[in-house]
Length: 271
Image 1 (cartoon, rainbow, N blue to C red):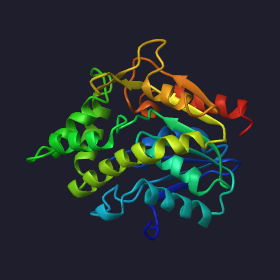
Image 2: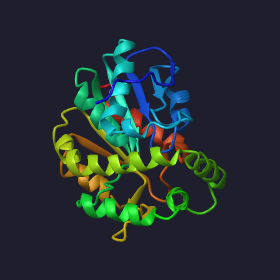
Image 3: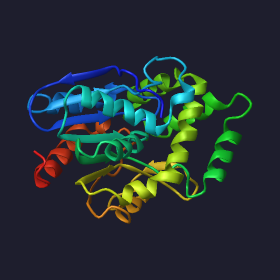
Image 4: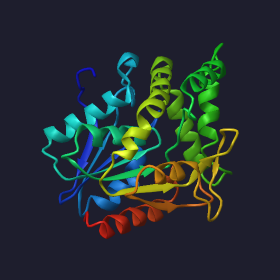
């Protein structure tokens, strides 16, 4: 791992535990604004923007899941946090697994929001597919399509357009590094770290991937690929499933998401 960097972040509220909310690929801390507003009146909430995001510029050589997590751990240790519920969205699910792995003394609960398995069990094939899809100037068109299919219909058109525009501002070299490293983490560390979890875990899921690898909304009563994957490896996990919504669960259905988190946290004795 490289040396840690100081992260842009918001730190609001007081009270135990501390909610630490980690965003996904090509995103930033604003994706957790509804949860910050809901939880900060009662608990401490920390929302960082990960290195290589939020206009930081090129940092491609350092953008591993391990380094992203180490930055978060360094931030929490500097702030004296010892009792954290750590949540990650999308790519952030890998980061929070790493946070738990690196700082088991800090993390008391884990929340995984709309995660996925990007390597599909075959890292070489996954990387080859990514390289082929993004060759010859197609990286940003690929990224735009990736984000557009995270939303369904025009119900959240304004949010969709804002998320797409933000993603397209990511430097190409950062994006390539992050996506390759995310796939590598899935293929080489995902299963081991999932099986090692002993803290209460909540999986919030609103989308899945079909056999063609394309993201779609969960159908009513459907669990989806990622929850099934977690269930087979993490006996501590509980599940909150939301049909008919896109990938940005906490923004599209904030009240539902907040209630799911607090119900689980109370039942698990974390709050």
